[in-house]
Image (cartoon, rainbow, N blue to C red; front, top):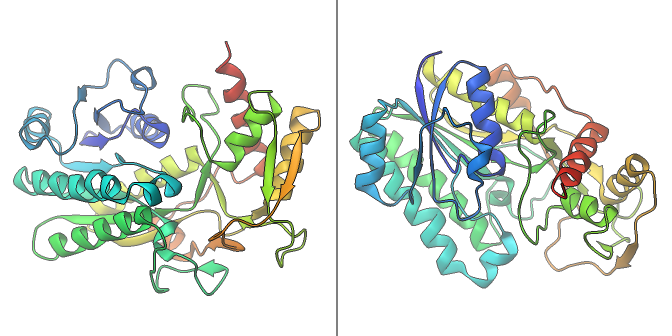
Length: 327
């Protein structure tokens, strides 16, 4: 491939992995990131980089034009459910309004293919454990609504413009680049596996399991964890099919099976080789018992199969990355 792809948020956790996946697939990535949470060193020096917000339309359009971009992978945005509840206006401004500005810039510069990083949070608290894309969407947080509204904006624009788009609904993204080139740097992270690894390495005093009386085999919540490198490969596969004329739509990104919080704790302790200081707390309001992706559509339409579907591998790369941050 020689197509040039604009990646917004390309210096972030997922974005940096996507950059490496694009390079491996012979695409030409260029990056826009305001570095509010991204890390410049995560992006190879050979990749053109613009420090900018995505709602700075003239700068964005000039950058697209300068590099003759034909596709966009849109990853920039705020990502905390908890934070969105405290600052809904900030989330709607940054995630939804800025996305509209980006979409407008893409239409102005004749972008043909658009991939959007959405989230399983658009489903809210679904009535079934394994969730297909066809189930009703009912977000329970401003973050979830900000993602769903962007999906709908894209759908409306693509209905009348010569652009096709896929919204990828991420489930629980975890792990780090197996080669150690990038990983999660989020301060005060709430991601389960990162927090557990920080606790195992003494960066946090303890880890709290919120709820041990759920209707699951061990009483703790179950989630579908996907390795970030596999998720990055999905973006490349999605871009491939869009370029071949795929009409777009929404697709779940997970493995189609889950692990409980207790199973993840046991795996971290086993790979770390020492027990973790665990506290067992009460359930949190709004926590879902179990949430697993139905990935039938995504696998069929993208022809994708995972390379890292192994909880041990996810945890191992996370622990190695977390250890590197101290050096």
